[in-house]
Length: 301
Image 1 (spheres, rainbow, N blue to C red):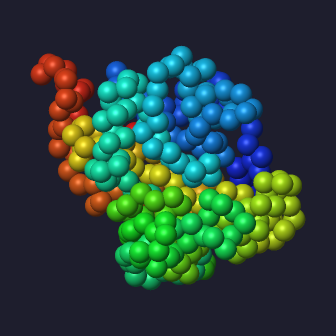
Image 2 (cartoon, rainbow, N blue to C red):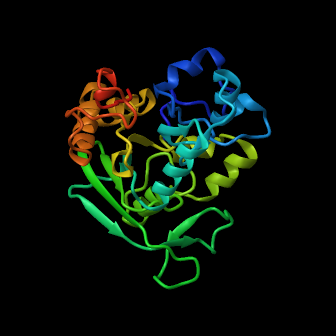
């Protein structure tokens, strides 16, 4: 059940505040722009104008007309978004994503107490039983639309009937984390589509937030955060991180008794274990030997 005293993300997405946009920048150089996307904002342009999406706001507010999204995050997923400033970099990184050469570390708060790590290797495909065409479900290998999918959930803290989990994506399927979390009985907190009642998703699309949402969901968005992206396996010397967001920190403090500093420390440790070697000097591909800043690893957040 939603806590009415919690300061949670808006139930209807506002327009991006131009004055706030620059504060979302985690890292920028001649090739990349890396942002910390809030959990209420769509990535791709929408009908509501440029300030209603991340891509539109970047073009309008930062004056970058030639940008290419390397990958996308669902509207309600917060965290690291990488944009390429030129076509060559964009193609290179999108090809790396397709080839599974980019490391991704997520953090999630899930329902129930997950005591041991869970490696989930269950194929995913369209849920033909659902009214929501984008919904995925676990399917038999070899069936129409089935795609191999692998996710590893690592419990970092368990309390109050919830688990703070670090999540590693070994494949990149639509809604993979959320569908796999549901399949193993640990649904992502606040998930309207893979949560306690999939009808909540359609109700939200038609009517906005309703009393039924407040009764069944403890957050106004899904508790999923892209914590770090590692481009080094793709031949680019960047490890980019976004701090644990304030709304999920409040939830963990109120429902799990975990301080924001504790959660951030747990997530930092998970990222460091998953993406080791970040403290050693890393050379930029086109850096001058005298450019000492370029010789250091790039960290967002």
